[in-house]
Length: 604
Picture 1: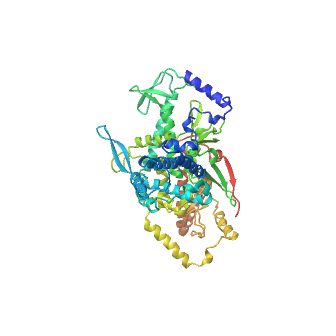
Picture 2 (picture 1 turned 90 degrees about the vertical axis):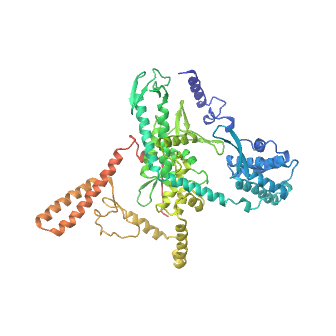
Picture 3 (picture 1 turned 135 degrees about the horizontal axis):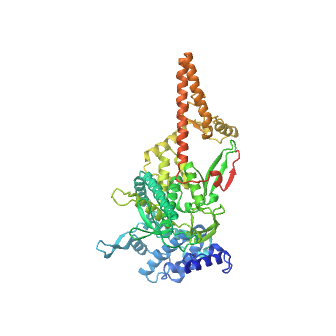
């Protein structure tokens, strides 16, 4: 073990034993720099711009203190930067001696003109740098913050005149000047274009992510099997193994390729895995990146239907942007991905390690949790950062060779998967209000803003149709569901249970095949009923032979149709089992092995 590694290991032992001043372990981190801690409120405006004079600085600090309860740290920092830097410091610079919020028309007009543009430095093709003045896209948002500042003080002056009354002044910015309609339309157009470009190539990205992971695992497995100091060849590449290793397990994770370059095969496999897991989870759930990084072992729960006892897997999304948690249905594909991630992060005792969770928005440490997005670095279990996730996506995109319409390399942001998920769901018939609940949006207009390519006319026509239908139909139809009706609704799904599986017909519809289930295309055959289905197939063959001997030609035709349907369902079962029997990952636990807790529903 080298000296730096030894010091790091000793530091970890000291932290875990709480030797260092009795501070909890999750706060004793090498990465806990002073810049990560929340800045005291009184230093906000001073740090954003030291030119702000004392009376106004005290006012800004008081205002920020009042807003603290409703804003996270990043939003609080942004409001402080706008008010202290872009607003009042700019006024002091161009109007020395100003000490009142009551601005003349000339002063406010001049400030609005200055805030409408910004000066940036651009690098030219020859390498030189030049200053360029360009429109400030965020100017309406800046005006909104300043307008809210004036309106808040005016409202608070009515409640506490002795504190806020001296600063109450007319608002120098009208509501029309804060309009962001054009900005939102441009943003919607850019977002739709990104979705249109990325939705068709998503299958290519998925295949590339799987291929990169398989190749990275093949290289790492070959390295683990090769003796120290040897040379091995895998996937057409030759690598040289170091003669010794300073790792505790004695196995190196880096090699030299044929050109003598150092290759970290262990890190390549880690990045390839988490890039694959990120793409799969985001495309199946549409969650935000902060919600992805907060997924824990306790997020996977099971819900038991109160009537049938059927267990439904659910994924609990912790409150983030809207401070509202939500539950998502776990599809079989998503369950495979989650179980693979859990298998990877589980420790030797079979449990997911509990690690610290640093909230970059609030700049605070959350209580340690068994997060799924974690890996071990230098003997310490750490949470995977945003940059690592984004770097993995960029590496996968570079390997795919995908380009946009201009021929430049295509880029993917984690939020692009959210737009793709919502767009694909709505285009495939999911009602917008259901997509709103799944996405966790507080307003359905936000959901429709994410959905690209969805025709505006179809939305308006559907809304008009609903309005006309409600006007024509009796008002008693729009009432609360009675317990008897709810019981009848649940009873329909209970009666869908059949000997061979489940019936997939819609609610309230009758069986059109007169309960000839083997022929029915909506019969969902359970894999456990394959022996019964084979027995039915064999019996049909014997009956056909008997009918042919006896000359019952009418029976032969009907039995042959049932036999063909039975053989088709057996083939579908075999194809499904073949896909399950040949996954990318082996040793994946079942859902019952990876759930953290179970909840049971009750009848309404």
